[in-house]
Image 1 (spheres, rainbow, N blue to C red):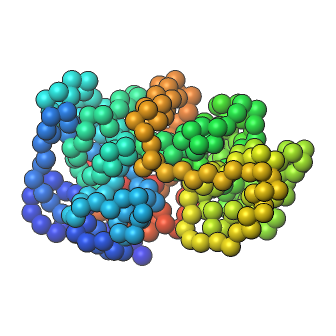
Image 2 (image 1 turned 180 degrees about the horizontal axis):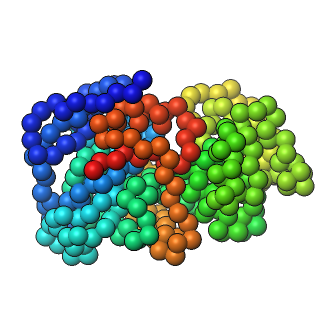
Image 3 (image 1 turned 45 degrees about the horizontal axis):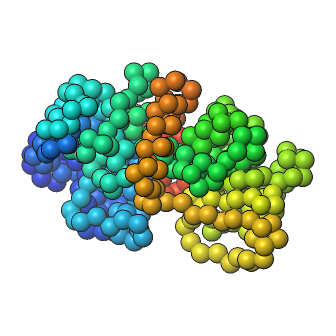
Length: 337
């Protein structure tokens, strides 16, 4: 059921606030004083904010990687216009179109009409991209780059299997891998999702809602298996992944929602690597490498963020429920204007 939040208190700025950890209902739309940037910060008038599964995990209070001080405003990803610049933030100017990727400093606050953030988390938004597309970059695109290249060590000409390829992380991963010269096999749960991933560069699309959906990979790879797998739901798929993995292959675990029973001998047979990934572990050098590559993709109009379902700012609880269900086509965003 859709829930449209009502304003909880008076002020000049609408934002989502979490006063206690729990289910989506703990998010409240409140009014507060407009914040002002300190040294090396900027204030961005937020036009759109990205909604990530990690946002929902953090809000629940059970996420292993982050537990912000209460109260807090969720959201790492945003796009909008700079409206105030703090001392020292000389690379930015009032009126600049920008997107915010606040993951490195664990800088939340995107679910709001305006946010103050470190200048280092703010990047120019190319003119050909909308604000909603800008809000779709941050966490998903950096995750895709890190999983493919920094953790997965993808090679040109190698075959990569991307589970959940029609989602917020999956689609940029498809685009990046295809652009790099890999042979991309993606999975989705619907015909629309399969069509979408093909349109963004996948050489083959498989329906993961059907039994035996991995069987065509033998034909696709001439029985040699895939060199790299991006696994979005390891608790469900990990054992099955070994059936299509090449000897010496790598599985990068991007997401998991529970435990699984696993036979370690499977990794021995293939001499395979299982590698976890989490953006919270990135070094400054890792993040710089990822953002430089992403800006190159975007500036050259080679790859494009794909916006899926859009919710109003007041519908943030519905957005969290939506991203937890999975099966999204593109990136879920909040319209904050």
